[in-house]
Amino acid sequence: MPDSIKLYSDGACSGNPGKGGWGAVILLHDGSTIELSGAEAMTTNNRMELIAAIEALRYIVNQNIPYSAITLTTDSSYVKNGITQWIHNWKRNQWRTSTKEPVKNQDLWQALDLLNQQLKPQWLWSKGHAGHQWNERCDTLAVQARNAL
Image (cartoon, rainbow, N blue to C red; front, side, top):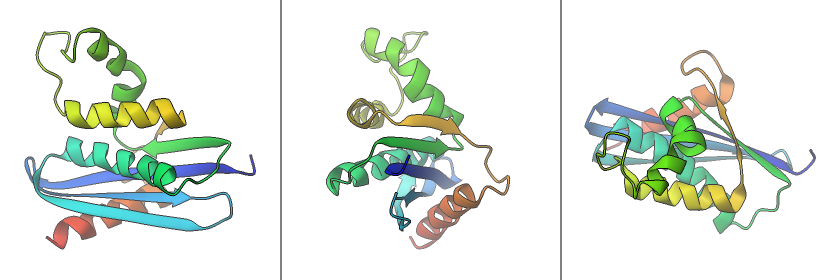
């Protein structure tokens, strides 16, 4: 598709919880590449993985970038399975897990859910640290952001 957008995201944490960073790469249909990153002093790896995906999608919305399709590739099965499978039951159960515990990172899941409903990306999973160019770049961005704290 000529105006499809590809997003890649990754999170990194030193200690869990501990210092964390996130990175995202956006490949636009015009051939340009956008890199995003950020960090938090006390966080978890799962939060960084979620924030990376949220910020990549949020960028598309905030910049009002036109598209015909979006794919978002993450190396986090937590993010991919959460947004494509688990979230339906969490919402049905008032943000409780199957064991009746509150869903961790509910604030981020709710933000991701809204963006997912708005943009309708295709969610893909890629094995982390396996030489995938854009996953590796996201990891580098996340680690650099974390280390800059």
